Image (cartoon, rainbow over all chains, first blue to last red; front, side):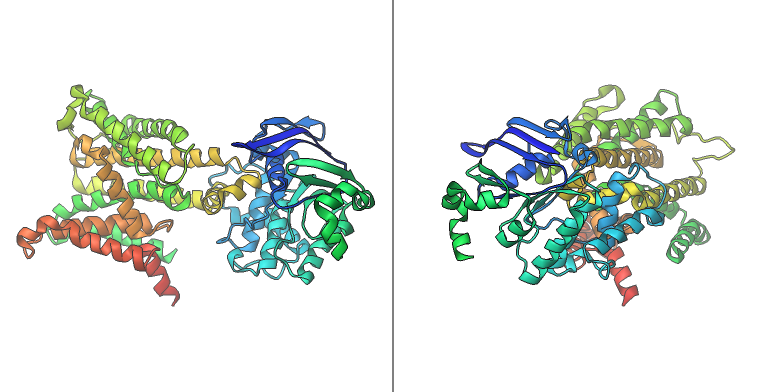
Length: 248
Length: 313
């Protein structure tokens, strides 16, 4: 599905992403974990196309996307959610999702016909709201949603573009245990049809959901494999997992 | 809908009332308000809906005016040629200026649009063949045919009104179309708009060009209004005036630009000519400044927002 080869990003003297090789297989939930500042969000930004790659390749479904602009990557089936909630705060929940549906259904260089009359857009937006648990909040202005609901909309916006691979950047950030359970359930529901690259600090969630895990430390992938391999990996335990697993 | 009919009725009745009161001077004033309403509405599209703070919209306004003026001086006075030409040249200018300016954001965008407009201002100041500093007097208003004599103030007023109505209707359609939604989404959150698959730069540029074209048409009309074009039309103060109109009336409110143009020009007209104020009439901008300050501080949605707010309450 997705293959990164030698992906690199430099910010001045800081090597944020250092020749990362990573393969996400068709249909899997692949978790990318690592301490803060390891470069996880930078990789997400590079893959989604908002940051250039200084070196390396991004191959998605056999196609080299490395130099493609962000909107073309979304068209190709690659969508992301943001770690820091990024929604259209003054639009209603329904309008938020309809806008994302609109992006991939027909041309938006339409200047005359009122968009409010396009039933198909809003029907699909409702279906997505239903999926992420916002069907009772459709007419609410997005900025007025509770934190957990905004996070759900965040993921909903990514799903509304109907991606083949979705990059979820800490979807459970700032959530209580109950809300986290809901996100886990959501990922369980969508995994049958969408491949997921999941960046997450909640290790319970990661070990419950992921089929494979890659560990990023200081911009380098130090291990990649099935959850039990990662748990047993001495280097990973020393660099990152040790304390958390010991505590858990 | 009711509001639209009310405003339209008011605009249609205005010159008839002035005629009846023997105040025909105000018919010309009314036409000027309508023309500035169109220019301000074009700015409101990029500023209010698109979130692009263009501080150089006088460039497109002035370009349209000069195209009409130069063509008229060269003997081409047909409105059917001059006005579309003004629109096209302004659109082309907006395409070039927009393509470069929209690579920047925030304060840089404000400054670069201002710089481009000032560059064009100096181009026309030094254009000696067409009056340079002194500007250019037109031999008369454009010719329209159909037995309509644009030199007649009443006819002129209604032609301008029809064009403004058409432009406002077009803007209304655009704002509520797919394109309009994308433009507003980009204003709200550009990063997210890009992340759900919109080529943000292209949409902003298209919006900028549409806006520039409309400003160019308004420019063609202002050249006719006083049968004169001068570099002052491109001066940055003119860009500022358009911006003040939009802010007064209501940024991103559909009726904002027409209201702002009417209020600002009416204040200018009554205050600067006021005998009660005597020598202080020269400083008519001072009370306007106070009003603007109050609007920005207490009614950021402008006068249109105040009216809508009261209705709901």
